[in-house]
Length: 292
Length: 139
Image (cartoon, rainbow over all chains, first blue to last red; front, side):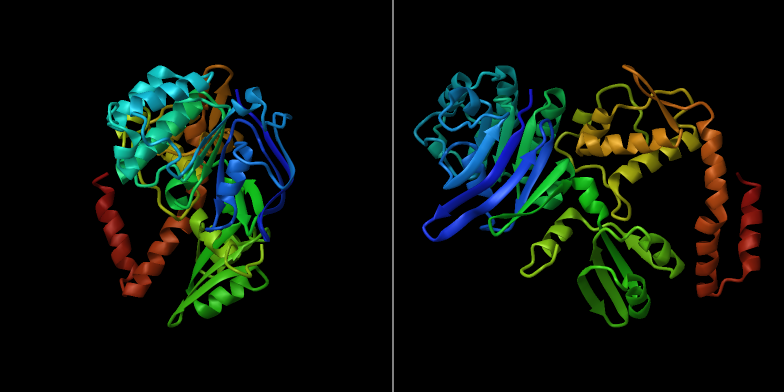
């Protein structure tokens, strides 16, 4: 069971500031979507609107065609794991999980128990007494065991050490494949998480910069290294989004639709073409003044 | 690397670093190339079943759609065949087809760069030929 999300002309103003500045997009059900954007791009605001934590200034949000705000059945389809410490601190871990289980129609108690073991969570301690990483792990356990049709993780791994983050990615992927659902991963750790995405939505200044299949997006970028004159000749006419020089050697990143013939031309010039990691593409595309 | 085990592979890699891809080619391409290499070397035999996209995705910690893309490419090239409801299998004649394709590109892709490198290092062609001849008896 996977939910589709449809957002139309969505706006969220805080005073004079538009955190979300008129965005429209659709998230296909049953996929893992990467939600990317620099600090202040509007990711967290967007997720809180989709999770009905606040009302938008204008525009619409539809989960499987229904406005979830104030409608319990629609809201129950959505689970947001926030990055901030939203869980009430006085609760013990056991009680927090019990509360989540009561709220969530698809709750998998066996999965929750296994994840608690994997993240070594102390069930009898209060949330407030946990470390930052442990609190994140509680959120991850709730997010995965809820099996909500639309599950959104907002930087859900803050404070987690690398082995625990890998454990999170692994559990997420396994449970997603066993129980396909719509997943949104909002993240700055693109290098670590990027391979999990099927689609990518990039926000910039409260607007949608692009939405695309992750492989498609990767295929639009290419990196070349070699003698500057040869590199310049091969990339002439292409959209160069990054360029660095070291003596006579030049390294160039190009982005766009017209890179099909690039491999052949580079090969003829004796240059190697490499794919550009998603994170590097993201950096280039979200630079102030960058053209998409 | 041999990937074609029957038991669940995912947990053997639990919390460990992911098996590394190089950063020269897209991941799906590397998975496809890996399968081709294993067919050529005989690790994967014709008619053998290959692991599912989900097993690949879990092993490499990648989106299953990415793994599926490798399989789609191999199916389009006639290297793998899909049997509905069962899985993907190595096509009959796949090894021969791959050998022919790889042979056609061998001199351009392998020998020419070698010759360029030798020239750059001042190694005469005769020395290369001698080396290849000497190895000939060993393999």
